[in-house]
Length: 432
Image (cartoon, rainbow, N blue to C red; front, side):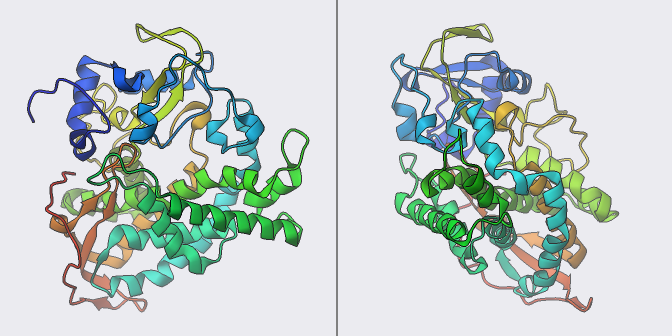
């Protein structure tokens, strides 16, 4: 790469290969200002860890997680946007402490006890369906893993499981800016998903919301600030966890299995005790392969952060993907090491916006790695035909074709599928 002189998260260069830009930022500009966006970006792990968690800083509790180019270009011109809590948008866009109250209405399915109750069901689903998937010989690994995370979210949200493939398609299409940094969310597709959730909420309300579906029922029964919430207001709270639960874990897990495939010694080490090692491998995959690049907040009053004066209305971008590769915290951070000691992680956010789905994600990722490696004796990622999302927010591998060379079927018999001809691909311009 030529000498870096500036950083723009919407540029094709940064969306294609952000890692050199992140290295430059960490080393030379740990807090970096982009005038046309009136926005600051923080790139080092320790700075992000402390700043995101510091509730005394005058930064909005609200957060815009999917800042597209159009959002970046519309600045606040020194004005602090009003708190929209009266309109009840999704909880990430509401100030604390209201944000916490709204999260509490929908987070019960993601608590440790609830996740433990799902674990046997999830493992049985993966184990029973995996042989038929592997028998294809050649398939998109991200999509195959995504069917299980999507079905789980459909179960949590009360959506018919037959809608799973369409739900996943809508979620993933919305986040892709490949080749076009100005491409925004697919309003039609996301509108379809939104409408599906609204109708689901309405159905639960009509059925009495008996508490058997806490993701929706608690909000119907409890309401907010002493009043009943509308179906639309409840749906606003459901969208973020639904979308996050569908798209993130499959991308992290599939990429992690790719890293293991190209590091045979690490793959052998993980296989030596899958029950103990799969969770460690997923934790490293979350650090190394996490698709989310950054999270954003808005300055509410003049404040000094990392030696710079931030003005009201300016936004701050926390480059968590950069933090995961910070050599000040992780030794040889650009190397995948399945058993890397990870004492702290920003892979699931930090502070008020720590991901409510962390326990579910870790359970799903651990089991998918464990069951895949228990069943598959030999596999190879078709790197030449892999395709990765290139957006200001997501950098995950949407299409990661895998060839299964040897696997055990449902009866434990070793099988060698013939494999299939790749059905799509690209020019392999992406680098892991």
